[in-house]
Length: 188
Ligand code: SF4
Image (cartoon, rainbow, N blue to C red; front, side, top):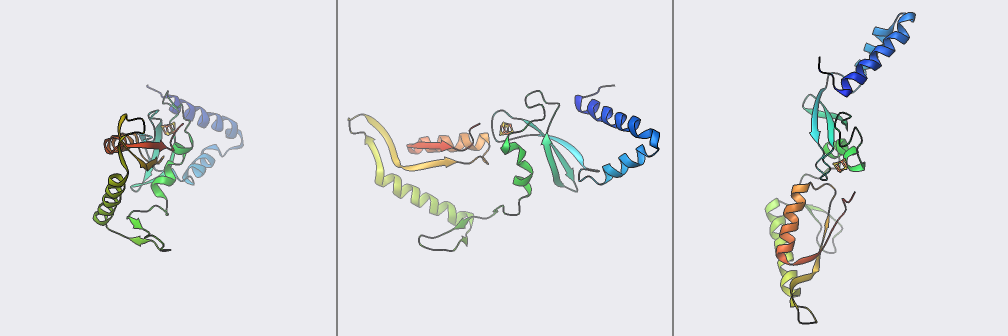
């Protein structure tokens, strides 16, 4: 029989609990009742990969009725051995958070209100502002006369909620526009 480290630990735990509680006569019922009360009771375990950095830690997602009800580090994966950093550990809240915004929101200059906008409107507005700023500030040469082809008036701050591939795409786009000030929050 092939046993993973996780299976082995689970079996040992159940075995020890059974041995310890059997003399007083209610081990099986106690263990079953406790397991039924857990939010992961009856859930399917799915191994997934944390998307937030190239360490690519494995996460066990517990899925019930099409919804993720719990996430935890995978103890069988040799890279993270069950551990997750703050970003990976917050995966469940990222997926299920009530405050998650699903539509573009816009706050006009001097306004105190957010307005819901369509994606088309938002992409158009972003393109307008970026082009205006780049055209007005683009430098072909620096003060020493060296060719630089850059804009110093646009700054990009990346988010820890972007995955590796999104970061690579954004980085290429920014460099293509001549943006030199780029930083990212998701450093380990
Ligand atoms: S962000 Fe954290 S949990 Fe996710 S892969 Fe990187 S180190 Fe692992």
